[in-house]
Length: 110
Image (tube, rainbow, N blue to C red; front, side, top):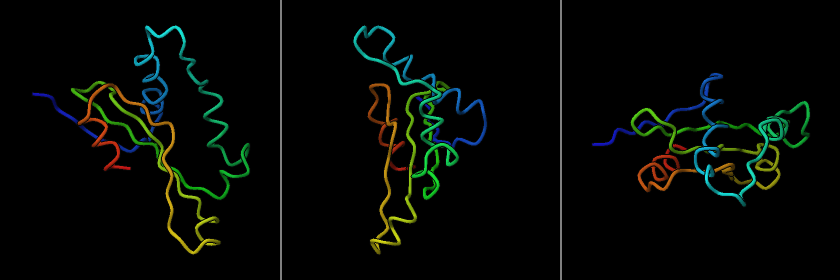
């Protein structure tokens, strides 16, 4: 029986797994281009991306049998929510192995 665990990214090992998952998923796909780690890090960095200054984000990983199986980043743009008078969240960088349980756990955790 498979064992699943969802975790919040809170240290470098988790970020390494976050960036490694697309390499697993697209290993045999000659067409897919994997985004660069630096590109994502800059998009999430408030010192390099003005929109990120208004956002809070949390990376989420799902492990299946201690192997990375799914990833996403949950994002809340607090400034936009204040202006709109709503509570809206966004999800980004969602990728997962073909596993409906891992995906469901990822979305529930986000």
